[in-house]
Length: 475
Image (cartoon, rainbow, N blue to C red; front, side, top):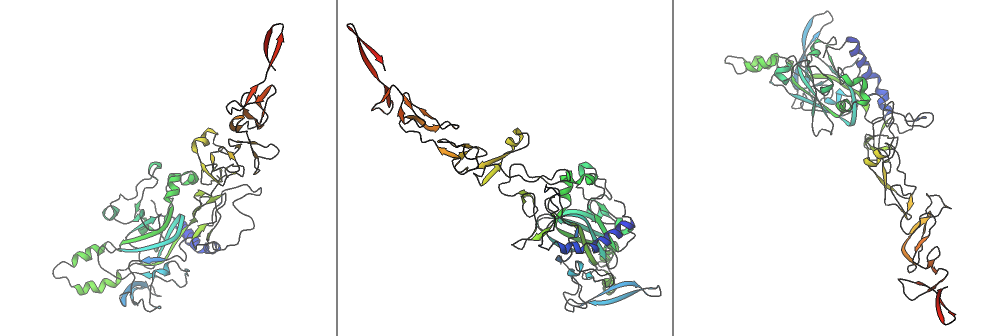
C-alpha cells in the first residue's frame, strides 16, 4: 500500500468533522417528506443511510489508561515559540478531571483549538501492548478508520474488527516498520480478485505527510471496489460491529531498552528517567461509514427495545434488513443494488393464509418469478396459492376467489354418491348407477329406490303378454 496523498488525508479529516450533523439526524424519528427508498412513482429503489462518523459518541474501552493507579508523570517534546524543541512534563491523574485522559475523549466532539487526548500509562516494557476497543452498536459498512495522535505515532499497531459484537476478532490492517518480525507478514503484499480479504501490513504511516494521523481505507487497492454492489466478498470485508486497535510497540528502541534491564551495571534509575516518554496518546478515533441496511433503508433509528436498527423498507425486516418480513417470501431475499432494488414480495394466497414459505425449485420452474407456498389455507381452499377448493367443496363463481365463501360445500348425498367430492367447476357430485341430481339425492328416470345402500336405485321392470308369451321389458 502506498502512502496516502496529502489531499486525501485532509479530506478524511474534514469528513470526520462535517458528518456529525448526519450522525445526529439518524436519531430523528420523523419520516422524511419523500421516502428515498421509492421513486416518484412509488417504485422501490436502492437507498442507504447517511455517511457518518460511526465512532462519534460511542463507548471506547482502554486496557490501560494513565493515572488509574495513582498520579503518573508523562513527558512530551514540544516546539517553543522561538523554534526550540524541549521536553515538557506533566501529571496524569484519573481522579482529577483537569488532568485525566480517559478513552471517552477519543470519540467526543473534536475541537482543533482544544485538543484532548487519551493516554496510556507510561512504560518501558516490551512488548508494550495496549488495546482500545470501540463498540459501534450494530453492523456498519466502513469506508475508513482514522486515528489522530497527540504526539508520535506507534511504530507497530494492529486493527481488528468484529462482526459478532466482540465475540471473535478478525485482522483488518497492520502497521509496522518491521512487518515480518512483529506480525509475521510480508510488507505491502499484492491483492488480486482471488484474495480480496487479504490483510496487509505496511509502514506507510511513518512516511505520512500528516505525521500525527493514520488513515486506513478499507477498499483501497481492492480490485472489486468499483463493483462493490456485486461483490459479497468486499461487502463482508467492510462490515463490522466493533473495532479494536492494539498497540504493540511505540518505538523500535523499546526492545533494546528492555534488553538493557537484564545487563549487569545498567542503572535502572536511568530507565525510570526515560519511562515518562514511552506512552501511547491519541486525540481522535473516527470511523467513516454507513449503517448497514443492505440497500433497503435510508436511516437507522432506535427501535422500541432500545436497539439501534435499520428503518427497513421494501418489505424487509431485521436489524440490518437482512431478511424478508413475514409472508413476503414469494422471491428470495436479495441486497438492493442501483440496477435491481430486490424488494421482498408477498405470497399470493388470495387472502386465505397468513403464513407461507419459499421453495427454490418452484421458483426456478416458474422462470424465477414466484416461489411462495402458502401454509394452512383457510376457508376450505387448497393449493400452493390457496387458489382452488379443497375436496368436498366447489367454486362459487358468483364470488371472487378472495372471498371467504368462495368455496361452497358439495353436500353430496352419503348414500347416492360415490364420494363426498364434486366437480370443482359446477359442483356436480359423482352419482352411483341410477342416481341423479346435483347432490345425487334422487333416483334417475326409470329407476326406483331400493333398500340397498350400495345400489340405492334400481331399474323398474314391466311384464307384457304377447299371445302365449310373457315378455319382460324395462320401463
